[in-house]
Image (cartoon, rainbow, N blue to C red; front, side, top):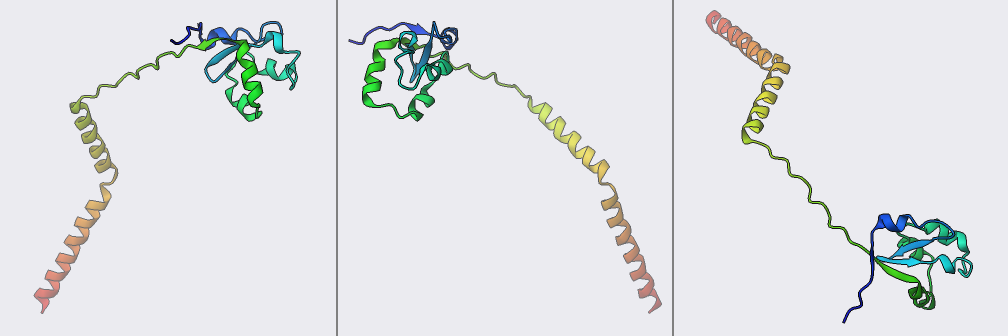
Length: 138
């Protein structure tokens, strides 16, 4: 049968960040290491800097021994409460808006680039007239 442990929020743990009241969170567990500060081989400043935070990365990076991992269990006072992730709010877009927006974009592009089609038509008319003039002169 699993043992019941007290659940803490990260906000609660973050309030315990002094030499007198020092909590750290490692791998989802909350540890009160206030009484261990003077005994910590790395010095108390290491624990105080990690106090009130999730110190999992720092703990793993330090390369703690199996004995250290076993010893820290005596300071465990509970677990970090996993808050449900908020569901993102969906944006509702009407198909009529999409088509209207597309129509507006095409209209803007045609206004912006009107010179290319006009030049193509003008060039075609000029070439056609020159061809007809040359054909009539033959």
